[in-house]
Length: 444
Image 1 (cartoon, helix red, strand yellow):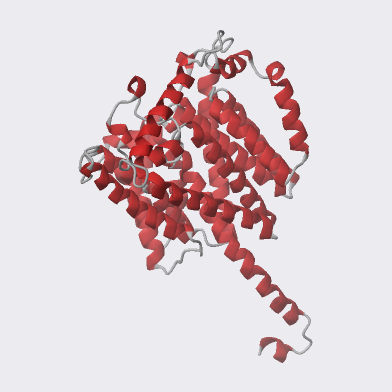
Image 2: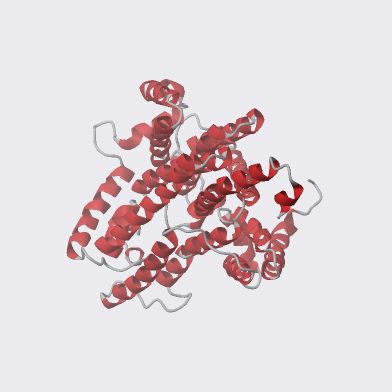
C-alpha cells in the first residue's frame, strides 16, 4: 500500500501466534485454529519467523495450544477410525526409525539435529492438525468458516504463483524458469497442492445453491487450475484429468464428454510451452527423457531394496540419508518410498488410512441433506483422488504445506457426518411443539 509496512508483516504475524495461544488456552480455541489455517501451506511466510525466538516452532505450539484449550473446555473428537489409524501409524513410524538405526541406515532419532527425527516431527504436524480441527470444528458455522478461510488462502497462493509465472516469457518451455512458489518447495509440489484444491472447489461448487457463491467457487477453481498449468507438472496434469473424470462419474456427466474431447484436442488448446513439457516424456529418438529415465532407474533400485526388507523396510526417513541415482534422495513415488522404508506393514496401514479418508468424504457426500455438507464431502473426495494420483510422481503426502489444509477439510467432513445425523432428530420435536394448541402441553 506504499506505507512501508511490508517489513513489519512477518513480525506482526509472529506475534499473532502468541496472542492466539493465549486466546486458545483461555476459552476460544476455534479462533486460534482459524489463525493456523492460512499458515499451513504458506511456508515462505513461516520462514520469516526463523529470525524470532522459537520461530521455527510457533505453528506447532499454537496447534498444541488449540488442542489443549479445546480439551480443557470439554471438546470431543468426531467418531472416526482415522484418529486411531494415525496413532498406530505415528508409533510405527517412530519405531521404524530405530529399525533403520539397527540396520545402519540412519542415525538415532533423538533430537532436532537428527534429520530423521525432524522428518518424523514435521510429518506428525498433520495428525496434530487433524486432531485440532476435529476438536474445534463442531458446528455448521465453523465448517463454513473453515472452507472460507481455505478459499482465501488458496486465492493468495494462486496470486503468488500467477505473478511469478506471468512475469516470465513462456513461448517455449524452459526448466530454469520454473519456481517453487509460496509453499517453499519445487514447482511439482506446488502443482500437487494447486491440483487437489482446485479440484476441491470444483467439486464443492456443485452443490452451492446461490448462483453467485457457486460462480465464485468455480472461478476460484478455474484460477487455481490455470495457475497449476504454468507449474508444468505432468503429474499434476494427470491428477486433474483423472479427478475430473471421477467428478463426472459422481455428479456431472457432461464432464465425461468434455474430458474426452479435451484428451483428443489438447494439443491445439494448451499453450505451446505446456505441450512441449508434456511431450518431453520421450526424446525425438524414442528414448525416455532424463527426468523420466531417472525415475525408472530409481524404481528399479528401490525394487531390490524392497525385496531385501519386504516386511518392515529399511526404516522410516532412511532413504534420504544416502544419495541414490544421480545423487537423488527421494524415490519420486511416495508409494514406492513407503514400501522401501516401512515395508508391507507400513503400506497396509497407508492403504487403510486412504480408504478411511475416502469413506468419510463419500459418506458425507451421499448421506448429507445440507448442500454445504454434500459439497464438502464431494470436494474432499475429489481432492483425495487428486492427491492419490499425484503421489505416484513423488512424495506429495508427508508435507504439511501440501496436505495440511486437506486434513482440516477431512476433519470437517467427519464432523458433518455427526451433524447430519443429529439434525433430523430435532426437527420432529420442533414440528410437534409448533402444532400444539395447549400452551401448557407445549412447555411441559
